Image (cartoon, rainbow, N blue to C red; front, side, top):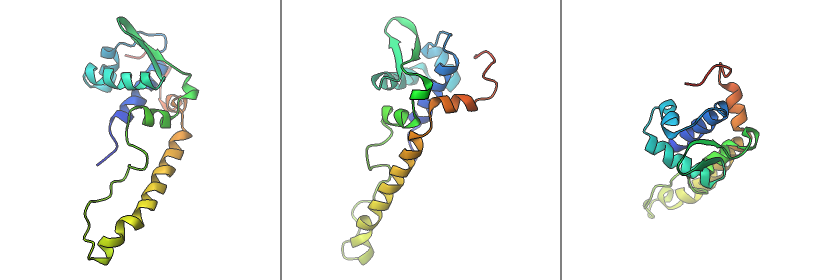
Length: 145
C-alpha cells in the first residue's frame, strides 16, 4: 500500500497556484493540469483550505495561495490531506501466532523501527517547501495552460 495520491495532488495544486498566481485558478483549470475530475480537486482544495494553505471563496471562481510558497512545507501538505495518522505510516499485521517466538515478539520489535522511519521521512518533508518545488519546474516563465 502506498501513501494516498492526495499528497502528490496537493503538492501539484499548490505548485500550480504558485506558478499561476495572476491567473484564474478554477477547479476545472486545476483538474485539467492534474488530469482528474474537478470534484477530486475541490475535495483536496477543501482540505488545503482548512489547513490555511489556500484561499477559496464560495461562488467566486479561482483559488489563491493562503501563505507564501516559502512558508508551505511538504509536511504541511502531508498533514493537510490526511495522508496518514501519527505513527501509522507502516501497518503491523494483526494476530501473529503468540505461540511462535517470532509471532510473539515481532510487533514489539519492529514498531519502534517503523516509528523512527516515519519520523525521518516527516523530517525530510519539513525541510522542503513548495517554493523549492516551483524552482525545479522547468520553463516556469512560460504561460500555464
